[in-house]
Amino acid sequence: MSDLVEKVRNDDLDNSILDEFFSGIAEDFVEFNFYDMLDNAKQMEKEKSYDIAEKIYLDVIEMFPEDFEPDFSLGCLYVKTGEKNEGRNHLEIALQKARDMEEEEDIIEMISSEIKKIK
Image (cartoon, rainbow, N blue to C red; front, side):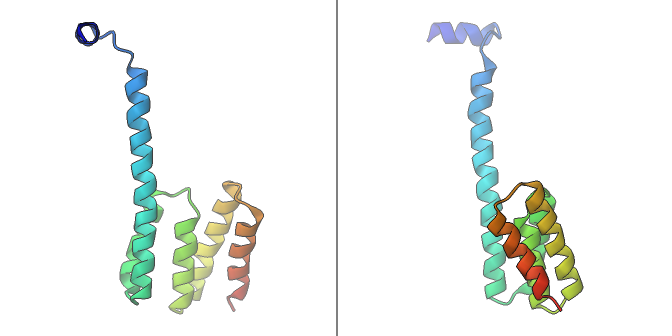
């Protein structure tokens, strides 16, 4: 134990171990936060609180701009509430993000299918 204290005092401690430890915790929190927010938005949709759901989706998009899921969900919400142009826009953004993320083909097809449904 005194060896550890001495290393800390002399600033000789290998910080990579601590960095790796805390990085893992941060990644777990961010992942939880992402899915928790999406679940909250979907719950608001079920309760027909569309304005709140929209706000949550927009917040998630701002926090996680590289992910396709919030754009997809927001696009579907807009289509459901009659805002077809906004819906198509977000679905097309989701499709591009999914391609950029190299998502599986069934995900690409699902998003494409939702776009094709819009008249």
